[in-house]
Length: 203
Image (cartoon, rainbow, N blue to C red; front, top):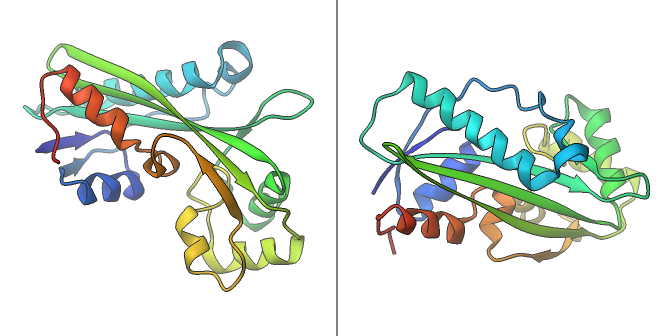
């Protein structure tokens, strides 16, 4: 089935294409950092859903389509003794190294908010994945960042990079309904939302 993705993320588009969707992408005009304060005030689930809603609204203002429109946002959260810390995209090597060092030996949450619209009908939901890292040393972290340049993902890592690196995986456990949630597009949740709006997703 056809789906308009309100996102510029190639990872989300690839997940959808692999699942049998015919995907058209439209980049929303939304400042993803403008609601950072919501994490402390309203929680990660509300933050992820609100960002997805704003992405949907941005694309709906510009595009006319008969296909369902899907907007998604992923919020990475690292619990600490000082409260939750938002995991963000890094703007360079040092920021990525620092973020990965903070994740060393910890478990963080990836909270996905999905909003699906068809005409005036809207369905939404939240998916949460927990990811545990082994203890990392700075040398291997720096080597990873310099080789793979993971600057386009929250947390400064990509799960698939573990399969290509000549070292033990950084990630030792993923707990959630489906691994697609790590990539920011939880397929089981999407299928439920499609059925809620009367669509039968690809098998």
